[in-house]
Image 1 (spheres, rainbow, N blue to C red):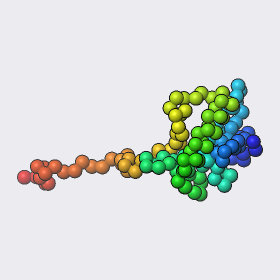
Image 2: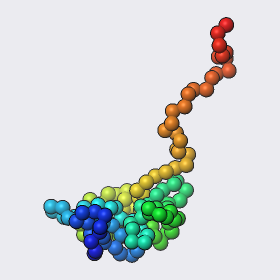
Image 3: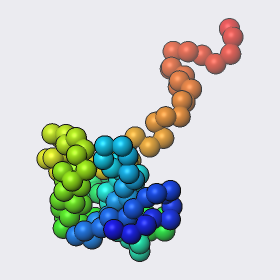
Image 4: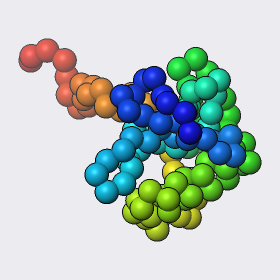
Length: 125
């Protein structure tokens, strides 16, 4: 456990190549940065693109291997037991991602004008 400069009173905890930043709270500890894979002394977020999970840091984005995902999952479960955090059923089944970016959904949030129908003539008669 080492002090983490990016978060006031934050402590970086690492194990199995995974890491998280914890802050002290009354009655226990809380996550300031969720568990992720350590990439050059930075906790990388887990990014899900639908077809594969990636580890994203401020400089890099690398494909996540099964061993990395298992290590993040094991580390997260251990931290939840130690800190007394709630362990949810769906999270205990496997690793959940921090960000979901499916390529089929990208660009859907932009509203486009409805296409003209073949029976609608442009202009007036």
